[in-house]
Amino acid sequence: MIHPCSKENIKYIICYAETILKHYITNNNKVNGFFVFLFHLFIQISSGYFLLACGVGFSFYATILVWCGILFSNLYFRGCILTKIERHLWDTTDWYGPYFFYCEMFHLTPSIIHNLFVAKIVLISIFICFKLWFR
Image 1 (cartoon, one colour):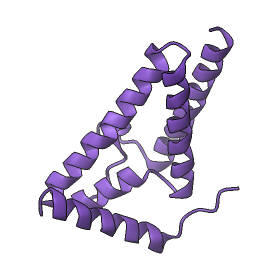
Image 2 (cartoon, rainbow, N blue to C red):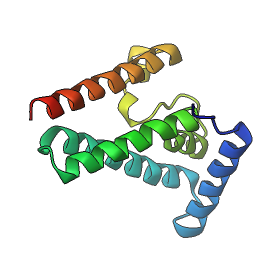
Image 3 (cartoon, rainbow, N blue to C red):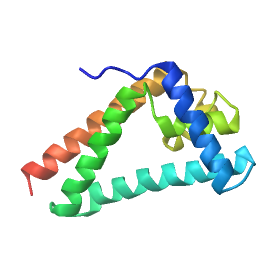
Image 4 (cartoon, rainbow, N blue to C red):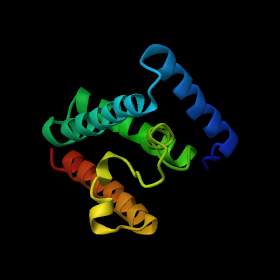
């Protein structure tokens, strides 16, 4: 069983990330949030590409390990830590991460977004199993 990180520790991590970004990039939190967003998007797109396009080999297994690490970190931090950093830097509560650009357009509630996240995890897991089984 994974014991979730305390809210105080999550807040400390978010503030520490903000301090590091202000020190190395810029004092503008909106710009820093955009850089975190780009990094977040890069991780999602590259891991999706390696899972879908690569054959079963080293890069596929490495991506599975990275993906499992992301999944466990989401459980540990009670959500995506990068999304929490983006929300803090952009000073918003309406942001749910790069996968959910369309939330405001379709008026999705947090419970629906959580269900979509779980469905995404299940679909990726099924895809990995099929790819390993039928390689």
